[in-house]
Length: 360
Length: 101
Image (tube, each protein chain N blue to C red):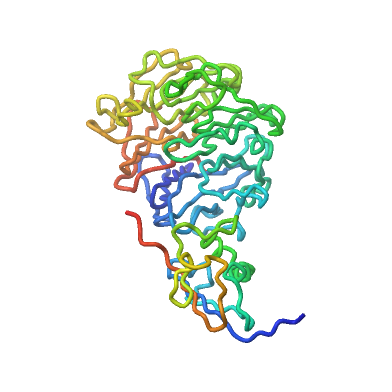
């Protein structure tokens, strides 16, 4: 029977949950106790079982480690998998995103704080700075969200290796069509309500972007107020927030095989970061954001927690599992597309990142 | 010109970092009689223990914010920082700041 791995990165370490049926789970951890784990990649390409994690200690700084035996042992590139070149004068603060490339089995991408994109051609053991984005004239004007200034979303295009979308808080969405040599802001239609000019070229606080599985040119964005869809690789965006209880939130998920199907996890507002009516819930759409349905069966109510931008995930089973981790250390799983949830883990430190995969 | 090795500096490693120093609680570095700036001492250590030294300073060479180095009991931040010259026989303590929750 296919094994499922759920990796749970928290403020104080990593836990790994294993299951053969996604109903009963064996929890292994903590790994890296007292290190935050804000980024995880599970690389199952070409028969691999590689876990990549970005860890960070308040004392000892950030690093990237990988395991090829599901966490029994971890390896670290001696001089660091991600190191800013000396000429930049910058130092790595935190790895926010680790993404396996969909078209090249050896390529892994990373997004970091400070705002930078990195490419690895050896499965994540060493990364090179994507100079085209680092040299972008807007970079010095990109701001810091509450969590820091970072590339938090990296979306390679499964149909075009030269095309990619990245997003940052604050700064917004940027795209490349030439393999990362040049980048353009892609924020038309995304409002920056906190800005004197609410429709700037860049500077939006985009919290997360997801790519539609059937139509890769279609993107979904959860903004710092505002939920949007783009049907042209981010060139223009239209609101899909009608029907939602609130347009604030941190995460957005796209179904891995059903086009037009997505989830957001609504939060009341910028100044009130709790679930709507204190009911932890997802909002689910099967028509690309045209209509929404609340999903809260099995989730706690009342609840005053919050789900961070990378703390929700979908696995790659045919009947995809949906996973939601909270700031109060619970992780919930649904194997019926969100219609009902079970608690997978509880009483962990606040959950920063969840990733899930069916193991080869 | 050949440098004359006249002594050693001892670097005391906190328990949480000893896995990155081959399990050792103390590392010894040979220095000549003129001593060596602390940043050069760390660079010499990095040849053998790169993961350890990356925990102490970032890739710009800056001492990490919550890492403290004491040379013979003196906090180098109150002196010359990583330019502090460490003499043969000195003891360098690595101590994490007390913070967090």
